[in-house]
Image 1: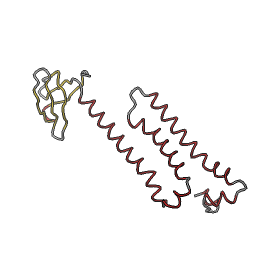
Image 2: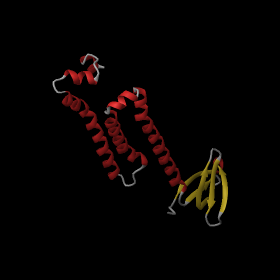
Image 3: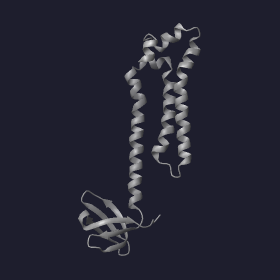
Image 4: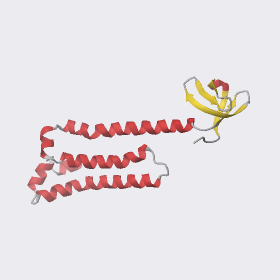
Length: 172
């Protein structure tokens, strides 16, 4: 709002046309946005490289920077401004970003849940009985479904019937 007031509420085209070198003015006014996207891309890739097991959300940051760079390049074309309203262009930019965030977050949550289900677990019952070599198959609002590995028996345990379930190994 401050910059708009100083610039007299003129559009980017008006500001560029009033300057002595419109091409240079357009370049320097867009430069911070391009620089910001490059920083996001480089920072995102550094985060991915640094992580031992990068998640989908880690990959989302550099993808977001690349998408924004593409949208800025795409939006510069004169026909885009003629044929696409501002709200349509904003939907074109942010629609895929929101969809990618939802998909990446859901994928990471599913992988997190799957990693908890894999492997061997120790079930400590409310009565004090400790049961080794159980594998979690499913968790529900009522309890958990487990597979007792030695006997290959599937059982459903309510949350009141056990104190806790500990992960003791991995069957990967």
